[in-house]
Image 1 (cartoon, rainbow, N blue to C red):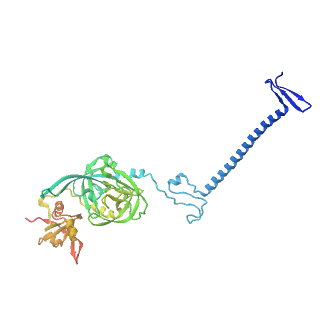
Image 2 (image 1 turned 30 degrees about the vertical axis):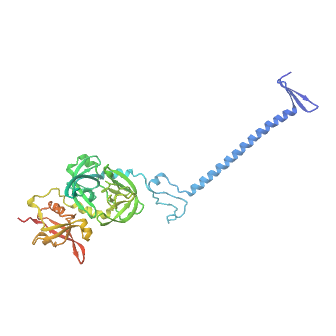
Image 3 (image 1 turned 90 degrees about the vertical axis):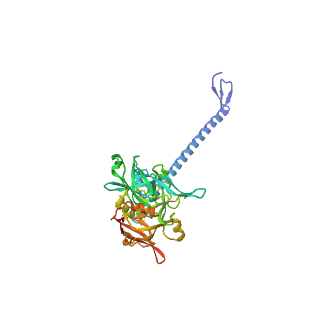
Length: 443
């Protein structure tokens, strides 16, 4: 036998193939086998052609969708987005000019680190060391006086300086009844401070730090904050709150303006109008800054306003209302030392305290009730009358006779101060400012 020999059979028109495997195949069998091979290859070609056609069709569809979308979508580059300006060709007259260009696209920037870095050198932490005094009752019903040292923390904003002092604004309740104030600056240094002026009604105070008590490094590290305006604020505008939260040091929270001109009743019954925000304002944040997105101070934060337990409702004193008062407090004379006994000023009144409890029971102002006016005294000359209630001395709130005597000890005979009294007139109390020139104590 020969390998793979093929012989013709003329009678049948077929071929016969002999192979070394010992099998014989007829021509008809060969044709069927070749047809099978040809048929399978044809199917592969058809499938490949269909896949290619589908790919071309799908690609064309995707390109058409992309092209159409680009014609309808605003085209903005990164520089335009960073500047808050985008161009939108082909949208029609969106800005009234017929140009089809939107030229005022704004967005809220979530990263406020640049703003914080800019303003943080103007923020300080304040530590108030004070003495708490009062009267308590023993278990046997005996009264006794107590005196306990205490420490509280708050925040402040550097707003200016004069030839001798660095001036810092804060809340009045942060520095009230202080024995000693310490201020912590951004570089970690501390310095003693004294109260320069207070306005209890607005809960504002200005404290002063001697410039010569600050190192050159500290003076180079700190800055003066920039005041903005609270008159043109809008609901939903982003804000940043900075302060010495919980006494741990400066921290930053952010949020939006939740309400404007929000009237809140204070603990003493007085009412005020404030900015409401959902930025977290906690213990220690009082006296810190509420900033707009440009880093300008638009409010003075106060944790005391509105209570302590409401989450998501913080309040700040609007800076436009606070600015005139702050300016006045910054101009006051800083009184750090009591005058000598022989130089102390004299008013010429006898007094009785009107406590908050008594005031609430009888509907009269809290302060110091004048029981007698000495004839020919500075008080009489100023126009103070019996039963007037003194509520302020030189702009400082007066709550008790002891507090008034303490304040007078910083003033010399011959100095003129403003005394604010509440006087009963036609069945109601009215506030009256009187100019009083302190005299010398009688021999």
